[in-house]
Length: 189
Length: 189
DNA sequence: ATGGATTATTGACATAAGTCAATGCGGCGG
DNA sequence: CCGCCGCATTGACTTATGTCAATAATCCAT
Image 1 (tube, protein in one colour):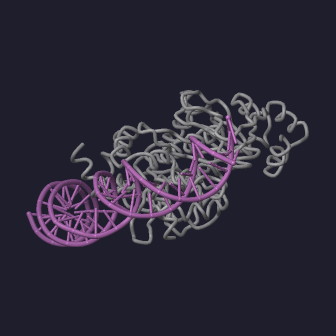
Image 2 (cartoon, protein in one colour):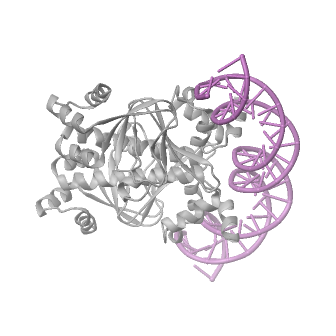
């Protein structure tokens, strides 16, 4: 399990065996069954999770009980709630496995220490955060500029294969649509 | 002009006089008149801009000629296009002053060197990027979860005063609405 | 001051997307 | 193996938002 994480890290920067060991020492491998929570709204989140296998979704539930998915994380992605992490406030999001998954959890204290003590780790995280920000901005752009159909097309193109392993209604929720609307879009397209 | 930037930096981390000098050495102060571009779509963007005074907007123009504002930047904010910066591709966005403004431009080469050589600078940027990412995620959440009216209310609350110094139709564009819709929302609310 | 641009508002109408309800399919768990 | 639950689809209808066009109000710049 950890080997996958190590390989991910080595593909991004050079780590010495000692550094890898230091990272492994604070890595907690966790198995999640489909529908199991990694984080529940209301809890304070103080960690970062690397997805070894499977898929997670991060979503909120609004006053009407509707779910809104703000992100998916498949193999080699990260899942986290920066909002709760930075603010120390209880999270408004849930993070849940959409299929049986394995993640590596790094508590924030350990994570920050690694950033300080392992330059290559800091470098990887720096790049990660920047790319995440860029991706998020791009999603804002789509959300405010595109029609439902355009958003769906972009999703398919941007995350090939993801639509195949996730229920349609979750894709709809990710795009800010209802399941019915997405179904109708797919019919004609 | 630079003093504002220095004050911003000092408020975020401790900088020695020598470090400040090093930063100042690569800082280019630039005045922008209302409607003047800092970046035009099609150009490659290789810098980061700190807003000393005034206000900038970053927006795209779609096939129908409609503008979509992905961000504003007022005093003590940053304006940039990470997408173009990271990819090296021509930008799809314009960055334009909405009022007479003064910015400090740091070319990306210099910016990255500062991150490497001035730890406090790196620290400030790290925090900035993380907060920007968080803010962007939060905006995604609003965009896919809220009604037009809820988005507008949140905007007013999140950026008090901003709606007063920017034309309504730009607020609408930022929220992904038409000017008419926003006007009608304001009437009843 | 005057005149053109920019901005905001309003009305009538069009359209995209949501809501509600029903149906059917298919897989998972007892 | 059966039954239920989750998932997708469809239809009829509602609602939110967009579109187009006209009118003011305001702001600059000549």
